[in-house]
Length: 525
View 1 (tube, one colour):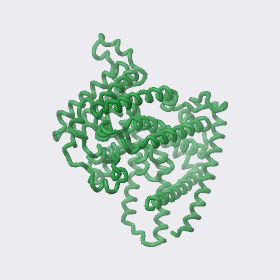
View 2 (cartoon, helix red, strand yellow):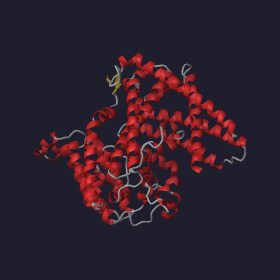
View 3 (spheres, rainbow, N blue to C red):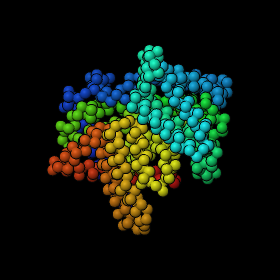
């Protein structure tokens, strides 16, 4: 395709996108105005006389605790950095500093129930040290951690009464946050420590010399995250103190991002060099701008309140699409802010964790790229500790079912999450088949390139629609809502809306192609 045609196409696509978002914003404002008195979770807001959508418990708790969190993390990182500088502390010394800080922090969060955390994590450490070099290690590690992942949920964190009535009084000291909710992340770290210790006497998965030649960071003397993850640390870094510090490290304890043990221990010894002080400051400033965007969204567009109030069942197909699209964007921005907030404080203290939302939700047109960019640190963890050990791409069709079932169980024991996981797996199958066929398709002239690009855009539109359905089923309407969705969009009234959203997603996919092309040209130059 010649450049003049692509430029004209880009102008049309941009014009369509502008009109689309004008309609979405106008109709969203109207919907919020017409139905606000029927919605749950609206509270007096900070902007003029607007109500604020505080219906999402996770966002509400984070937002209300933001001032105290900022003060606490600012003070803790300042203390840790001063001690590192004054006493030239390395991994072992910094692990003691951060362990004491983290234990104080966890004592406030969980009260006496920190005992259960220390008991389980200590048992895991002994298990790794005993079985870490045996052929039964993977089986033992997974059975132990999956058992506690499930039991923690079933018994909702246990109680001291189970040890006898003399300990029952400790049940009153529960702290401010349920420990078994945070422990899901601890389980991932325990498995990471186990495998990194198990693999420490094996060859790394990455050709280090070849990687350094092609990696901008590594070639400039600043090891990238992948190199830190793959490069084994010495046995002296696998001590109980560093292990416990890794599991309970305060800035990343509640929500991540998830970092491998190798990468954490390396940076505990030598602080990250990828981000300068200026870049970390700019990162924090951009986060503040994103928070302002969220405040505007929750004060003017009550998407999540529509979802939890059940009002969307009374809406027209077009209005249902607007609310569904809005809920997904709200969820993306919520997690973007939470994860980047904690990652910022880790960066300030010298630990670079993977970015969880490296790409906007509106710039993903296939399942693989979506899951590489939504909770990306979890994706890296799944690939390293589950997908590759299970056989990797050689058994891809089978492995995605195992991986996504684990992801659903890890989140919570709910049928709607399992439905979400299995729907995603079903949608993965045609994408893998199409990708396999596309690889063998030879694009050797302009016409074939045009056909290939158009078919890819159509496939992208269908994939985005499937992603919306899977996520709405998993996190909003549940499996019982599938039949309701079909009754809304596959009837005479809903078909025009379904066609319109497919066209819109087709246009969006074509725009993403242009963005990708621009990035490639910039990279090549």
